[in-house]
Image 1 (cartoon, rainbow, N blue to C red):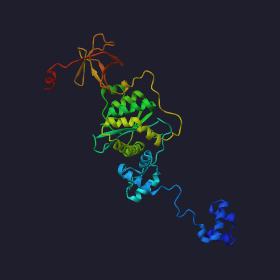
Image 2 (cartoon, one colour):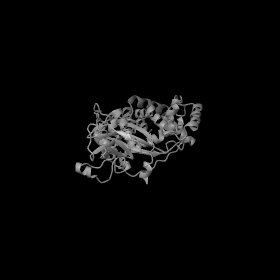
Image 3 (tube, helix red, strand yellow):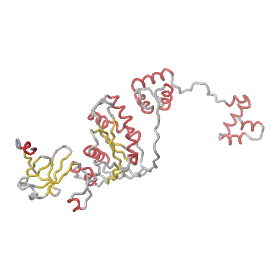
Image 4 (cartoon, rainbow, N blue to C red):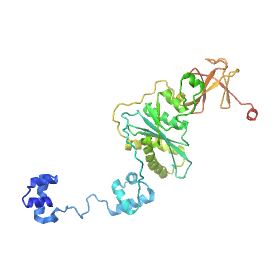
Length: 380
């Protein structure tokens, strides 16, 4: 209005007024014409007080709010809008947020966090993959306690997860195995300093003689694959996977609730049946570089021999190897035949099978059944 007063008093031209107002000359000319004819009221937008052409009817609005209360109570506006659209009730998440706020169905208070310096994403897919377990009430007291094992690529936010009873070595192995089958071997893994991934124990004499650092079973598997393990000093350092936990704790928990799932087996079936793919389609980002740092599996590599638990045991004078209260007889025709007193590797695969290795080669054995009463004698 002040600018048009300047035009009215001929201190500005319409073209100069258009420049000051940041609009085109034609628009400024139309506005000037309305102002000249109607005065101040001519500047009021013509749509004020009118119902928008794309407005949602009050009946549909109330139907959506009722459906939200019946089925999606506690869902965030974005996720609720997605679920409602699957039922044919399309509404923008911002509109739904406004309705829920007005109806008192949605309030959210964001917690204040200490300052953390921003870190740029890695450039390449597979250059760094973050790994962590999330303990949460996933079944909302409908089922047993469990842990979500989660991997997130730092460059793209691509995620892969599985449900397990605890954050164990076997669960971490199975998750990395699934990642390798899907994408290849990553260059490095970023994880906590938990004893699942790294160990603080002193090296054994054999490790000292070989110049090796102490490794966990998971660390040994990564060493075989050439994967570097990088440990974080705080949970916040693994921000990518920690924030991704929040996505699962929101969306996955609600999906489990909607489908009435209460077991780890059914939860994993849901993850593998498209839930993870839907998360990646929605939240994954393109990497800054098109180069992929994943390494393909070498032909002939059996990942069962990589993801296993290995211990060193001594061959007895009767060519019997003992491990975990079990005895394994090495036959005379085994090749190579280890000498009594030498070391063999006892490997337990994730399927529970036992394999004896001599200098990296598997040898045949026969398990000796325990003699009746022997366990009681040994225990005493």
